[in-house]
Length: 399
Image (cartoon, rainbow, N blue to C red; front, side, top):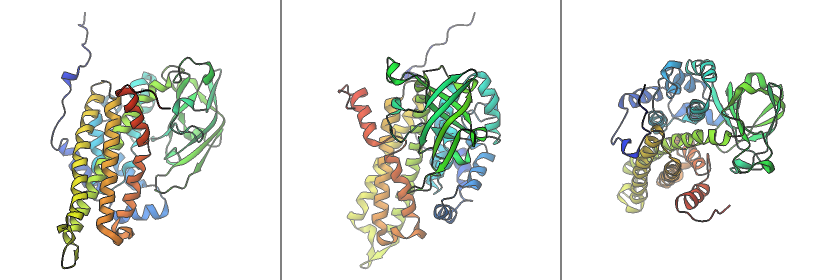
């Protein structure tokens, strides 16, 4: 008889210092060198999807980083996937176009059935299917996820879905979508988080058959949409996890998402710091480099210190996630620190460039806009603080 496996312990968790996954970083940098600033500038102006970049990331297997080897993926830990995204942003690219294929794995891998994983994962790993959409947020509920109203009613072997989602990015360019729905009315459940279920929707079948996707113009080129459901049918076999327990299933996806996008923020911060430092050293005003002035130096130096602190917290959060240990506190704290480090670095870079920061050819204004969104999504800074106050510090719930 096999001996029982001991559950993971904090003592078993190790955090690597220095530049880890060196080979992966080098490979990502080589790919990103093929997509210089003019490529992203053009996409931003046209509000277009970076098809070529996504294809390159798919063909090299990076978007299948978290998919187990038995399904054709690389079977890498979350930290490795984060490093991929971080290097993309550090190089000036914008990996938000494809990062959902990584963080949705937190839900699918941990809660999907063997049949679901065998049916979808090999095709996703091979680039034959894209899982790039995550339908959670609704216009009337925002980040109050437990109060979503999109309803799924059981009808034989199908669920019939009606409702609306908003800020569902990349739905126009995805084949599959994870969709959070209410399968039991909120006034009939014992806990706020009960009565929700996760469905894996085949967007190719759903378009024009109870589902309509509308592009949502926004401040940044995030390819985001709003989606309307009118008696869309989804097979019951496409439900991930138990009925009514979907909130617990998406928590793994949400923690993975917060950790992964925080890697992007660290990459953004490093791009801003390097760009600002170079410009400050070369820009001559009043007969001297502006970088000689402490008023220019200090905001950049402070942003660097904040970025280093965020990076360490992020490594810890990823290590806990990969060990299967609770990481809600660490994922949220990492999200807070990384998003603020990126924003402070963006502000320092913009201020250092002065008027030229507004010029599109310098790319500062575009990346400044992109960095700002991390203060709001996928969770706002205020909700992170509310989580820490209640769940970590034990203060009364504020909402």
